[in-house]
Image (cartoon, rainbow, N blue to C red; front, top):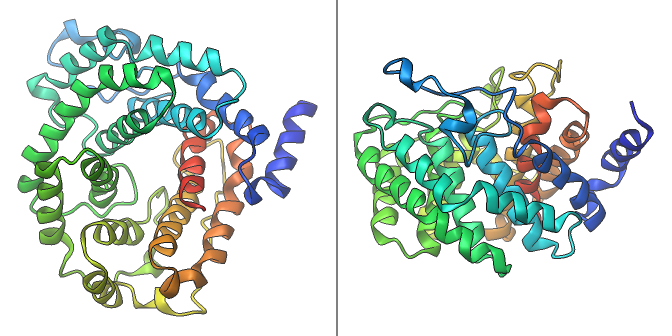
Length: 350
């Protein structure tokens, strides 16, 4: 291990969790910078109609071909826009902006639209990639950086298509997907709701709220002790809480939550962190992501309802702290996406 790499690993283990400083943001930014335009290794989620569709990742997805797969590329872009917003003096700023301009050009986004518009690709990245795309759209639209306005405009037609897909799809989903991986329904709604509220998209808000209530309102006693499953990177219980927290007023939400997850109200509530046995295994390393996603959901709950849930902060901190060293451990299996999850947790850690 290189001495500089070892130094950063020590920093993450002993100091990173206390504050997201410029120095540490610079190091986190190196991960998506490194893979944003790295075409291989690559996992394509492609349905082939015929041999003419056999093309390289970059030809198929000129905007989002890097970072191993489409959705990881999307949230890699989000990470960099978020860091530029939070740290205007971020190192390699001009390089980052140049790569964002290259990838998110009008021409490249149009090719992404063409791909998603294929009749046999209507379910492409549904809904994990969809919700991250709207997260990226929101970050660009709320940024004061000069480059962001142009890129938000470039991305908007693809985001509008994804919004249309949400509105078409959600009423057809008769049962929610409660997996702790990409297909989780609640996670797929949460960033979409945030963008719908910001953009004042009443139709999307209405669709998410009506369908979330239909899917989740009657849920009771979510089995926290069943988590995690072997390769989870999302908590089915907490993601559903995040959805209902967004759409319900306080009194209704707290009443629902007591029926759904009463243990969270216990001042002594504890939850073991998820542990990874082999971080070179691309599926097993998902569990580091679970720790980060638990942390951001707990922080989100604490931030909105501190009186009821401030006792959960130490637990959220512990989950965040535990997996931070794995973000920079040199294994591409985690590095290509874990920085985004860590930054998402920091976004909620106020």
